Length: 165
Image (cartoon, rainbow, N blue to C red; front, side, top):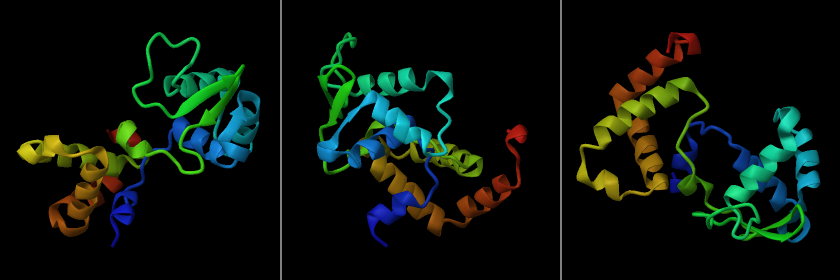
């Protein structure tokens, strides 16, 4: 199994940034206007609510090299503002490595609970602090595949509803 397959096994929580980057990857030259991004997201199952445009703009500006309203430079530059409400994906035609720059969260509460347990124990190993997020996810996926105790925890947590947490 390739490393990319390993870290994709657990169901990672989908983020606004994930969805926005997918829209940019489908645009010519990786360039899009906020209105076009919002329109594309409306065609998905993502609930934009009444503040969709501002959510998209804020998300992009958090990762923009030269956002006009940003007080400081983006720690993880993904976008470049090229005009009013118009941006370019810096890594186009490739996707940026979003795993390394976002919090590791899972869409499934059972995986999230097992992840928290795993991290608490993994932190005891000095090597853990030297690993990147992708490497941590790979270690988690490998351990989940091979560790019977983690598998049993996952099965036990799968029976819980979110209200039991």
